[in-house]
Length: 550
Image (cartoon, rainbow, N blue to C red; front, side, top):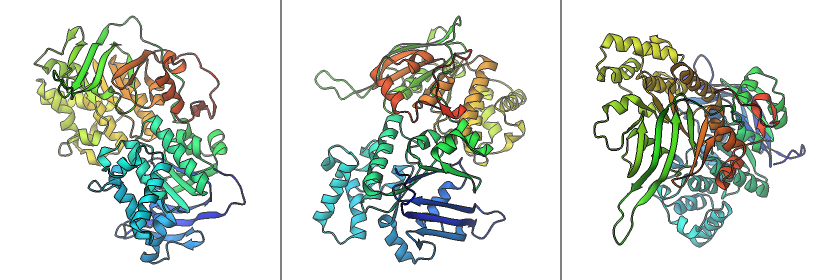
């Protein structure tokens, strides 16, 4: 990163307005202007729908020609207006002049080609190098992005790599021609904190080596605080505020910016353990093995090993860990969506593992999935989705409709939306509906599996407050699965830390997150962006405050 005012401007966005085609009543983006210098990182931040990704697509010349158009302004790349160049020139500029790293590498990579072939294709289309020269450059680039065993990974297909490795491949494709400008559109949103830290460090390292200008599109101010030189804040297609990282984080001028920054959860735990309440869930010695273990050979995988923990009435217990740690496997075993191999899952004093009829269990334990759009039936109205479980348990339609309406009000949505369909709501609204569908059954235990990981920080804050309100109003217990330590610190009374199928540490959130004993827990906390920053008060964290009441 650099703050040298004499650095050359690589990208200049001047008064850009983006309209729908044919032109609508209101532009998608209105009169946006900002510059990016060589070696500088400019973070473009805002909620979903703010226009930040559309602006980056315009820079790449990737706006859908039948839907969107730049109606005003200029986009200068090293002084050349990309809006005026021919299609052939734009193809030449992509990769060599400007490259892009997308949010989801699996959609950016071809599933039927090896990753080596896909990086090689960039060189084949844009250089005159021989096959041997290209292969050498590809392997060197793969080493520069810190991929292990590059000769093996060169021959691997995307599905054979981890999420972090796939994102490194996409970065290698973007940087192999040493572009002047790198556009990174939410490249770390779906990654674990440790992988996210590695990717951010990698981008910074390559940027310092090549003096690449970086435009980093994100809604995560934790990431922004780590990498930004300057920040551009957008809302509903308009530029709200610009400034240096310190100016925006410590003294934002606009209310919208203050709201965005203060919505970032703190790493300081807020909840005390629940005491004196009966046990709702007790997991004892849980083991889940996939595959078969024979007398001679063992082809099985232990996804969960000797997992034991307890959730009391009205308590929110978080299970935290990276992808592959076994946390979702445990949640699915608790719900009996998959059968444990060994151990006991005791719900309200009854072990449900040996039970064959799970009708009563389904009513006592409800599941909130990560993606509400996939968990809600697109052909059913919201009312039908909420009433379905109630009717299945013998409640008449009139009473079911009344309870569905009351539950929608509980999640801060009007009962009048019951005749609408899932696609007519925003992501945050759909997640509220998914929560309502679980709560309407009046369960004793809610399992929330990464229920806020895909949401903007402001919507995430709203959903977290909603879960706390529901817990306070109904006394429900919540098993909260997450890889985000900031979220766990805000909502959980107790936390269980898992690594490779085992519990490595558990206890009160304040004890585990403030004074971790295990190296893995410390590594997770160290990997969280800006662990020593108190976003809600626009300042560095000043020690551990007293715990809020449970």
